[in-house]
Length: 85
Image (cartoon, rainbow, N blue to C red; front, side, top):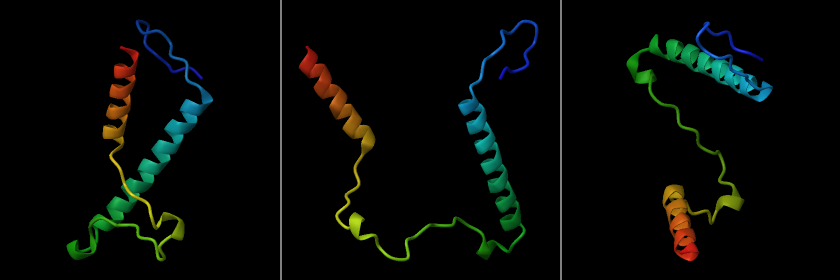
C-alpha cells in the first residue's frame, strides 16, 4: 500500500500489518472518544476514571511481585557492558 505524497516527497511503502494497526488504533480511539462524549454529558459525580478489578483473585498470580522493567533493563545492559570490557 502506498501513501499519496506531494511531488517533493518520496512515496512511502506501508505493510498490511502497519495498515491493520493504524485501522485498529483509529477504531479504538473513535470508541474512546464516543465513550468520553457520553460520559461528559452526565453529571460530574458519575464521571471519572473506570478501574478494572478482577472479581476473584487469580491463584496463579498469588505470589506475583511487580518489578521496574526500566531498572531491570538498565542493570542488564550495564552487566553486558561490564562483561564485554
